[in-house]
Length: 201
Length: 201
Image (cartoon, rainbow over all chains, first blue to last red; front, side):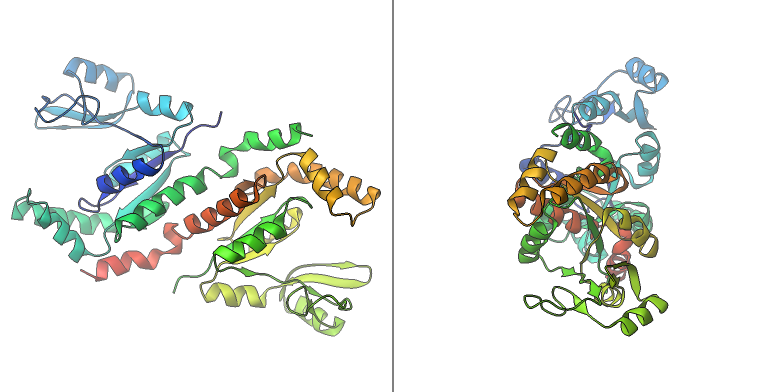
């Protein structure tokens, strides 16, 4: 069996990563990496869906065993990406999507050299600002901070393999799907197919 | 404007390159490179479609000016790939497909480092042999020679970026189209889009 494809997805807050992934999951089988945290589960959250909720001892054991791809400690709680499920899915031939901070993509590529990285961006800062404001969840200060961060993040886009502009949702979803389908035709990923052709002599 | 994509297509004789390209041309705009030759035009051939028919003086001038990507002299006639039209189409943003012998792909990549290469193969040697026999145009000796060559060519498949197995024509055509569409989302090919997002601030 061919190993699955690991796709690293990054982009500014408000670029629509989650919406695109929700739609993508409806048209093609993907596995989405779930973050692990030591913070308390909120009432509207589900374990293994919103986060994998664990205790500090377990999290620290994972760090020690290099079972966490990357992690931060924030307000006294750990947040990180567990490696185990990703390795399992990839070995089962699944397409795995890892949503990650812009600055984190490069370090993931060092661990998974065959991974591909996709930068998703809104069509303009104007649209980004509008989307952030429409969320109605962030303070003015937060919005300005996110816009400032987005400006910096855009300068990092060139480090990514692919660029998807999320103007029309459907186009962005189709483009992401196209990237996955094309990458699965890369010769080095399906090298066994060559011997299949040869053996069917 | 973004430069077009140059796609190098190779594969054993009988893998269905022409049939796939004919179908692809119906669903997406592509430019197909036409070979140049000094041999006599046959009655059923059209200039600039089957070949660009030129005289020896012109062909040799093209070789001297490096206007020919690669050429062979066969039975006293030159056959080669003119560079001029390819450069023109690429500068106009078009997707250009260059059908070429398996051994020629690498030298083309040296001239066009951004080009991508696709190896197209029949699903098995059994199918390949059947296709070659169904042509009814080749002698038994020719068929055996082509099969022998195909065996060697298959060992070169790993040198290509993508692998397309031409089992069901429609799948092969869709896969080739998917590769083109994905490659056009490569960040380095649409780097200007990043500044467009930034400038629409």
